[in-house]
Picture 1 (tube, rainbow, N blue to C red):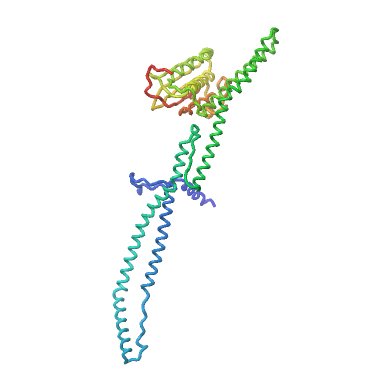
Picture 2 (picture 1 turned 60 degrees about the vertical axis):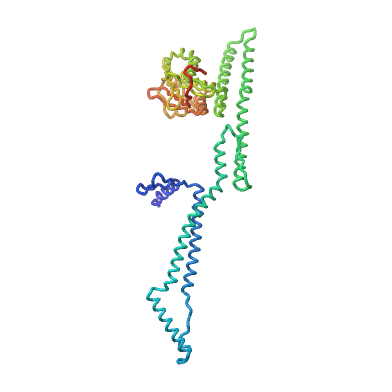
Length: 431
């Protein structure tokens, strides 16, 4: 049966969305209906229950009044007494008066006094029910807000807590009920997270020394072996040179790991305010030999006054160095690099573009992930650990910025870094 399936899917989608009113029944702009919160649902539940109970009570009272008004007193007929006697004549008179009253009531449409009283009672009851419904909804709104106040306080406290202040707790006060149990459970979770974050930060702080020590020992052993008076065989010299190259590569990989870990854990040492053009100039000086060896043309464009940012000087410098190093390594001999820095809409940006072969957009989008590299047949270089741009992305995110990678249609890569700009910095100041 394929017919109901589209209707079922449409109904399921509609349940997860707010109902939109048609244009001809759209409410005015100054009316703001509350969202479907727990407080609104509780208030609606209180109001519905009160209306149902009030309507039931009103129906019972009206039924009792109708039954009582329909009860009449039975008067014995004249046949029960002997005609001609005083008792018989009295009963006949009573029966005659009763017949006249019933006829008058039938002409007037029933019992006017009792009918009017019943109608007045019904109208008053309905009015009282409407007034008490409004009052009950208002009281339900207040009671629901009071009952949900601990939940709002826990939500606000949880939103304030981040990896920088994991020592803060919800500390829910009050009787030991379900809400306090929920708050204590969240506090226990925060305590375990704090312990885990502290352990990771200790690892980041100690890994540099603990892991560099074996590398230093291995380098010293190679130097001692090559420093003997007798000349070493050519095979030994080649093996020692290869080992030293691999040790240098491991050292650079280890340093990249530590920088990535510090950036991901928001560890920002050496806070300073610095211009991006000054940082890019220093990075180009560090890459001068590689740029000269590959005969690359470098063009720098910066706005007057420079684009100023605040953050860790070491990490921001490393971020720009990685981008320029990527542009140098993944380029063609005799190619070009263009670096542009500026400020717009409160954001400082540095854009590094380089020439090279045409790249695929799907591969470029993944370059900000660790250990993602494009093969040497596409870029002309197989060097690097695959962590350079992932470090750039982590450092930019740690400073409240972002990284954007785009493959240029003519070939090469465009790397754009956006950071919060610092305004009001003197033009001649330097970090």
